[in-house]
Image (cartoon, rainbow, N blue to C red; front, top):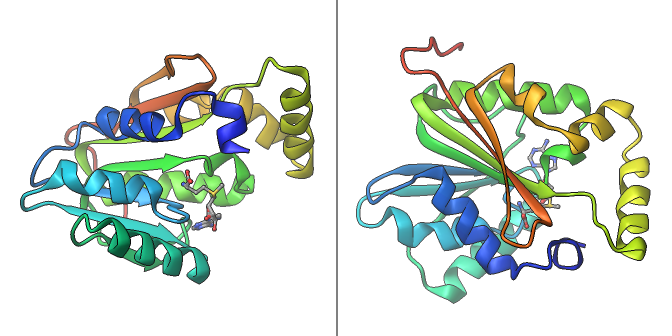
Length: 201
Ligand SMILES: C[S@@+](CC[C@H](N)C(=O)[O-])C[C@H]1O[C@@H](n2cnc3c(N)ncnc32)[C@H](O)[C@@H]1O
């Protein structure tokens, strides 16, 4: 579905997502709902030397596959952790940036709300959250599949979120902006944790 929707080479899109996190050598990046670790593995080179990439997913099977991918691509030490986005196993202000691709709109409204709170908690003040999702496809067949997928997700709040994430992210982040990928089929939504913001425990 991701490849069918995006039309942009998925590796290029993931690189764009990583670039927008602003992560640099020595930085600490969390890739939320990492799946098979495609973003986390590509991000590892951006934080070297001295940085840290952690991929978290609640599926042990996905995390196993991510570990194998990191090993096969020989990018260095990516850390993969089984954990729930709604209850992240990390201390306050542990990361400079958090990325999340193709997962936020699948979460139930309660889990998503909790996950956004958790992202804000584990980010350092001034840290950045970047999420990437599909825009509604224009090709009729792909749009049909996309709508079926959204309707399977049930809640109307999920459909509202998929249409426009910005108001949801504004509850937790400052300077929230939305950007389209070069082919206009994917969107990146960027928000910053305010400098000097309290980190709720
Ligand atoms: C469509 S995949 C996207 C994977 C990856 N980010 C990518 O772009 O290829 C969604 C992932 O979110 C994970 N996920 C769903 N709910 C989660 C939760 N509450 N906590 C952690 N991971 C979750 C799933 O296990 C799945 O691997």
